[in-house]
Picture (cartoon, rainbow, N blue to C red):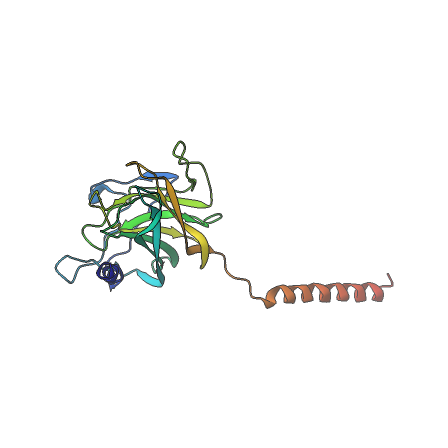
Length: 254
């Protein structure tokens, strides 16, 4: 796993490439052929014979973290560590906007599956979607939804929720898809924060696993922070204006 994790970070190396494109919509489905996939963002050129790709030059890394996550064992239901979630915030220099990236690396010795990645905290912010590869074997992003529900219902997995972005995947060691590409969300949020439950990794139970949501801390969109002194300053200006108005009224004999 350590070698794989090093490979993940190696993919965040700058390289020269034209600006990337993102797509927008309520729900969009990808294509297995990258040439026709609306989400696909060409990666930077490889410098090691095609084993790893580089980050497009219009992206710069603002923050990067990783979190190990657990899923219930298929036999006894006990939680066990099965993979690592990588969380990144990028800046797109073509328009200055923030990009939130998600990537999953499953432990090749463990079982489990993630069918959906949920990113929370997008109420009031826009969202466009794309994916880019770190290696040639990365699993593509299957779909993206601007409004979806992050819950455990297998009957209606798409309940509207304006706060949540749903990214479809099928990362699974048994199906030889143990690693995802970087799944990207570009937003007009001016800032970002680290918050609890910002990420949900959903195992839907498609192969008789237990449905389960692994909730993790992660990066989320945020407004421009208000300086601590600003409310006091505005309050002081309001009192000053009131005092001046009373003085003017007294001068006019009112």
